[in-house]
Image 1 (spheres, rainbow, N blue to C red):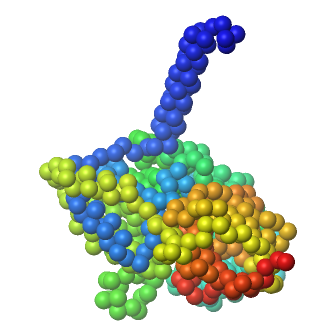
Image 2 (image 1 turned 180 degrees about the vertical axis):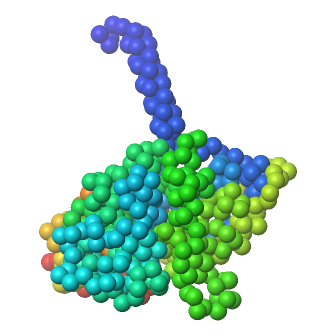
Image 3 (image 1 turned 30 degrees about the vertical axis):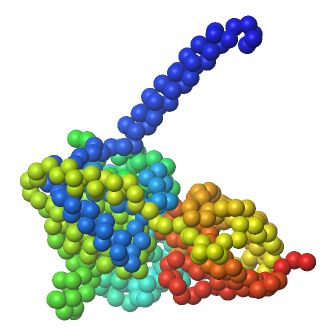
Length: 525
């Protein structure tokens, strides 16, 4: 048939291609309509200096902070957004304690549906998990005390409980309460978990499922997931993964006092209650210290007050939703930093003064430079030291017993790609690294993080998205960098080869050069 009717086949094939292209176009457009809520606008039209935003990006590049993404909304429009490659707009990002504000929002919905009140006693929800003796402070503990981080426990019990216990509810209720609930602020992530447990108790749904028709679906948020403990309860205080645009949507909802596309999703009374001052984190601190700190402006219902009359959702290592009512602006950031205040200082120093009450004259030159800058954002891959590259290298090393349970490492370098196979416990993990570039991939191997020791079910989170790069530092020293691109973190392993011997250092990014794990091995015969 193909030999006798070539023109007919070609025409038919072209029509099929056209139909397929049309199908993909309309489906892509439909997906964009469902997920990309925000219109785009020029900075100057929104009263923001494009040069000021560019100065912010230049300051970020010169700082010690590692930004992964940034989105700037003014008057409901995106005026600047960027992702530092290999991070991408389509990827989620672990939020750590930024998750708390979503748990607080679930409480707000439950209050609006009259399922609970903030004055309900915590003990009333868990009659089967209470200690034999209920002391007065425990009996007095309310949902509001959990929301405001004034549960009265001291010290924060979170890490000790989640790393050693399966029943976190029962463990929380068994802990001593040493201060009158509601009287003193102490950051307590286990208290946020209890809010998640309360929502699940009264609704019969995990927080992530309860929020889906009420928050996520109306905002066009898709693909989210949330870590769970061994009891099947969302962790509440951490563990939510969302895209950067999703963070901006959450901020815009709160900026609009709970209104989304003309519909009141969350009562405006709750938005005000949840984001206004409830407790002073440092009542005895010197005023000059308070004036310089975004952690001493007051705590709300799992939101923080900021300087400049702003408020924020806030996660470890720099995951932010900053809402600025006075400027009608929202800024979403994902990152990894050891100095979270330093990141916010950049916002106040460069972005705040870039905003003006009225539109600004067009500045096409500055806007073009800004757009080019945003398009070129990247975290540089590793590069070989001059004359050190070894483009053909193949060895297998048996590794001595270690805390990472790595029993062997195999290397196979072929040109500009390094294949590394790690055997951990009974599993083999094949990882690919590019020379002078990132190679994107995925793995079942869990990456580094603050809560990897928690007694959770992490299985549903795999496979993990990764990006890898490698370089020779000298003829005997190979370095690989593995970024877990849906988390803030990465790990770097430096291998030192000495004939048949191997010594290696494993460094996690959030340790900033300290607490390296040593590996030692010998090449196979």
